[in-house]
Image (cartoon, rainbow, N blue to C red; front, side, top):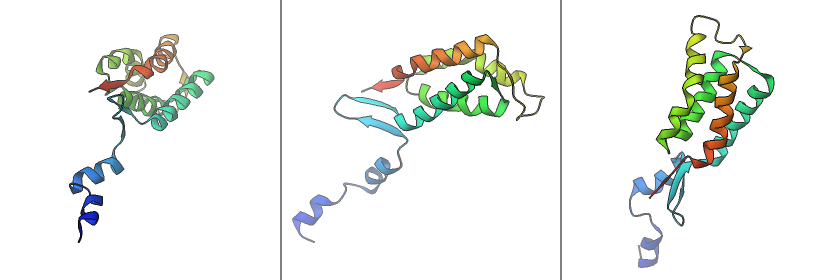
Amino acid sequence: MNLKDSQDMPKNQFSSNFKQRSKEHVDGDQGTLCAKPSKVCKYVALALEILRRGKASQKELQVIGGGFVYAAMFRRPLLGSLNQVWRAIAEREHRSQFRREWLPREVMAEMLRFIALSPLAFMSF
């Protein structure tokens, strides 16, 4: 192996695999770390569909809530804006997971608020 070949090799195996498997979006120029925009967009689209319908099952709320938590992990105080969503999930605990029920206005407002706050879900380094 000559010098040119060794320069093309990753410094260690972990660093080369991390970039491929990473679920985060790293912007070294701006110094930020956030959820992958494509994933966040999928959860936002699901939430907007539920807001349009006005109804959701417990399973749908769990999926959207999980996606919102994924985004909020990069700005932890955002987790405090999901209280009504968790309450709605817990209230549906003893009913069918797949039965769609009308969402309270508080839950809908909280989901919309989180969507509006989602651009703030990043870490600076």
